[in-house]
Length: 247
Image (tube, rainbow, N blue to C red; front, side, top):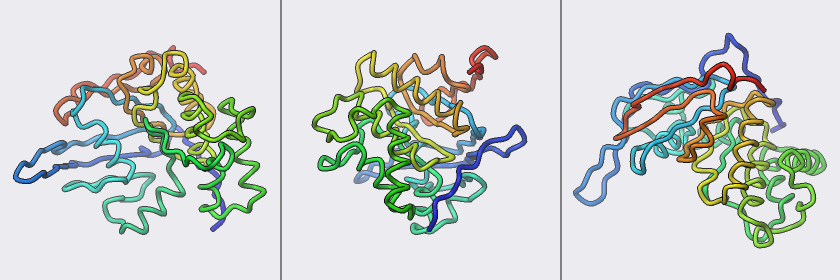
C-alpha cells in the first residue's frame, strides 16, 4: 500500500464527521450506564473543534466513537463520507491507519524506541519505504520543535517533549482527521501552551480536522467551535468570533 496525499478541506466540502442519533451504554454487572443517547452532531472539515464538560459527561466516549475506536449501540457515524458503523473490524482498522491520527493524555510511546523511530513506525505500516518514512518523520519532528531530541527515548524526555513526539507521530501520516483526548492535562502551563499552539497550527497550516476533548480553558482561544457537554448531551454549541479565524 502506498502513501496517500492528504485531502484538504474546501468551503463546499461535506462535514468531515457526522453522528446521527448515536447511543452508547456500558454495563458492569447488573448496572447499565447510558452514556450517550440520540446524539447528533456534524464537524466541519479543516476546523479545530473543542469538546469540554465535567468528568463522566461522555465527551471521551464521543471522541472514541467518532474516531472509530468504539462501536455505537445505535445510530451511525460517517467520517470522510464512510459509514464507520457499517465497516468490519479490519476495514475500520485500515480506515484509522490511513485517515486518522491520535494524541492521548498518556502519550502512548514505546519505551525502547527513540523519537525518530516512534514517528517512523506507523509510516512503515502505511507501506512507505524506509528512506521516505525517515524523511517524513524528520519533517514532522522538526515541525513540533523536536529535531535536537530525535535520538532520545521516552525515559529521557520531559512530559511536554513526549507529547510533541506523539503529535509528530500522528502528523507524519498526513491525516485528514486528528483526535486529541486531554492532550495538555498531564503537562505544566508552559508545555501545555506549546501543545495548544501546535494543534492550532496543524488545523491552520495543514487543513486537518482537529477534534479535541479538553478541560483546558486556553484552548477556547484557538478553537473554531466549542461544544459543551453534560450528561451525554451537548448543552451549548458556540463558534469563535471572526478574529479567532485569523492565522
